[in-house]
Length: 389
Image (cartoon, rainbow, N blue to C red; front, side, top):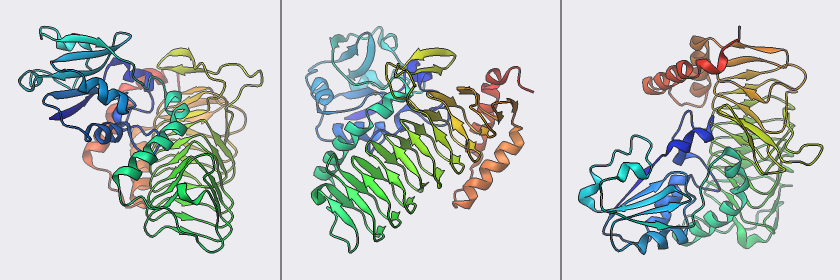
């Protein structure tokens, strides 16, 4: 049995989060979307090749739907291809390097079945599913991994509902810390450091080698990826790996990609004053999120200066630098430099030089392939910066 993960044309609705990664490498809960697919489908054997949409939040129900296919078939939800069960000989005819839909399987004799699946469509779907996925992923890991160990009492650390607190190897939790798992599990991965008087409320995940600064307040529904440095107040948000928010300021209902640095007292609004649904500009389309809460969605390598303010539903592309007083635009293109008074295009050579320096500080080498991807993205997003100086 092989499980192959594909993308479809709706990946564009997840920009700018997927400019530098595949859809299935996005995080929701403890795991990435692909890690969930691998974990659930590894629990059973199939005699077919399984194609799974990378936007799926995998669960037992999806596996059961696939298992029910006794012959090759397509599994669809509202016309969207969720999964395909294909004879192994047929599978070689399908190219997963290109976006797939049910047209890619035309000419093959396949049944079609309607399923109920959970698909990530927009960036805020990751945020609003994060709390439930933290709980589900923790239970999955609890069953599969001997490395997920219930935390032992640590002198000077206050733990509530200790059975749902999991502490990894070589993690350091300083006196005065409160870890509250009454509303969901808290997973503290290997090598994490949580400094004095910080508060972590579940459901939450703190990734490997990350640092939670003294006095930080991490509220439920939050995922912190590996090698992050987080201070201030964070609520119901996802930080990918290697990103920093070291100082005071509020980030809520947001998705922050890799290698981002948020300056001191950076804040985002995640609730409109009229309590209405937040609209977000995605890939040139103004989309009603259908949610009262939606914060900041920031691409890789972007930065904010001190005291930066972001409005509800702000989208920032890759390698942009935002600074200055007032609220900047709610849609900031990739490789832009400026703030509320306007933006200029960020020189690509300087952008690469800065990104390389940032990565080197964390002992990560910028490979030639990564640089090529960076420069290619600069060219591909030129239309976003049309009119900038």
